[in-house]
Length: 145
Image (cartoon, rainbow, N blue to C red; front, top):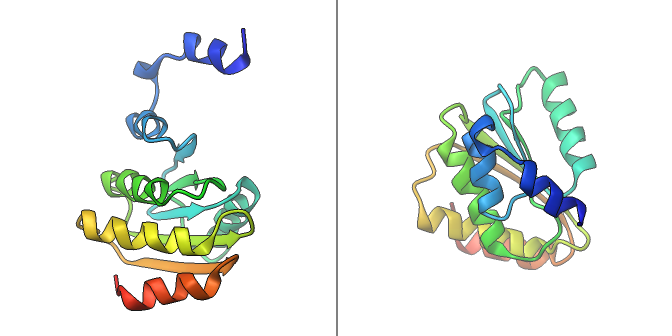
């Protein structure tokens, strides 16, 4: 039996935070609800930790740990915004992507799609760097969110 199969058998979703269960159901494996009010979306656990530390040092409080990973799928970005929108504690969101394997244009497309598909009620700050940055900037520039 593989480890993930074993974990699935012993997982008791009744004992977990409903947002964390929902995130896994939407393909976001690395989401942890925290007690702050600034939602974060990053690609990579190390970047998530650095962003959370930086927020804390600046006096902010992260509302979550959310690593969308390196999968180039704009739907994962949309689903991340669905999770953050479902959290009543989230008052703003910081998207910090350093795209090597994760392409910036795909992330930008996901941000635009999220804003088209749902009412985003909080300010969103986006920092993008890396692969296909110019295309990502064009996408966001052509679709103000």
